[in-house]
Length: 92
Image (cartoon, rainbow, N blue to C red):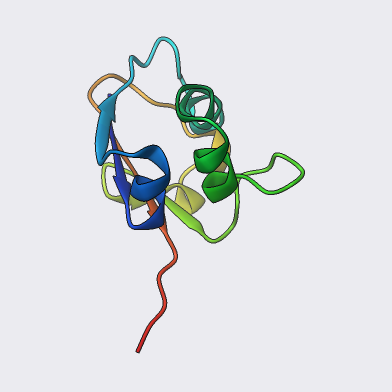
């Protein structure tokens, strides 16, 4: 699957996009663990709380749909999916 990073998440990953096979990350929760394992602590701070939960202020989209309106962290993934991670951005 195609995994895209935006804003502060892309800075933490050091890149804008990676490919991850769905067999190694069949759902959002597993995908986050795979990505943190690949990119380390900087990405973990952007995606996870101190308790290891996915942060609420991170928007995760699968094929343009927010996972909050799908099955949350249990949202199933396939190789054809595009998953986007967007950090909350504020400004004026």
